[in-house]
Image (cartoon, rainbow, N blue to C red; front, side):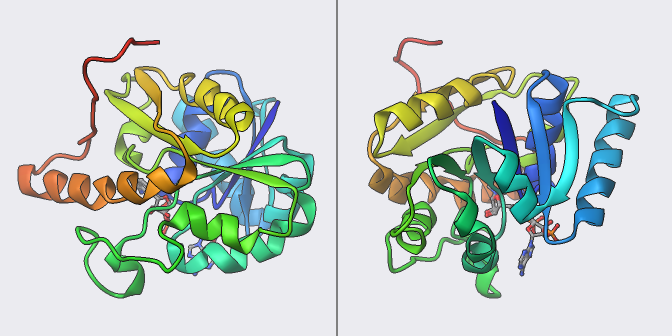
Length: 226
Ligand SMILES: NC(=O)c1ccc[n+]([C@@H]2O[C@H](COP(=O)([O-])OP(=O)(O)OC[C@H]3O[C@@H](n4cnc5c(N)ncnc54)[C@H](OP(=O)(O)O)[C@@H]3O)[C@@H](O)[C@H]2O)c1
């Protein structure tokens, strides 16, 4: 199974690419510019102290989408529509895992504040943009901070809330999330539940700032663990 990380040159995408490449998954980093994706690959190779990692490559967003089975979307809200438009012709039969959080900073405000989008959540906005396409949307990763992903010598101490309307796609996403060391994926129900989940991200950013830390995350207790 090949994973394309669209916008994988940014903080969140790079962290996910690093973790998944390190654990042996087949990863392709996508960017608007192939050269920038190749630079991101070099950055990961440098971090892992390896060269020519076979299971990691960098391509343009459309080329990465074409060869992938699962797409992880890691672009800011303001880039969501243009990015999806650039890959929408190559999504048939695939799964998109959307990591987008609707932060006020996306429109010039603060990252500690949430903004409402018309569709209810960023993931539902993705679903609306792609409504005519044969693609399944799941939301995940929006509560995992990039610093925890980048700190690859350490386990990630948090749960990951996963939402989606198609059970088979959601199971595949949960399987993938659980490959992140220390992370426990929790099925939170339908895609519309993302309206609640995305609001946790600005809260965590605020807690990071208030406590002068970088790794705030959430744990749900009382459930069976993986
Ligand atoms: N950072 C975190 O800790 C964190 C945690 C949880 C959730 N998230 C969510 O994950 C997503 C990515 O976050 P991030 O911090 O990685 O974002 P970012 O670094 O600002 O951007 C990620 C990538 O998106 C592309 N991009 C940026 N602005 C764009 C624009 N105006 N038009 C088109 N493409 C653009 C760029 O890729 P190219 O230039 O290579 O095309 C960039 O490297 C966001 O939705 C965020 O809410 C982030």
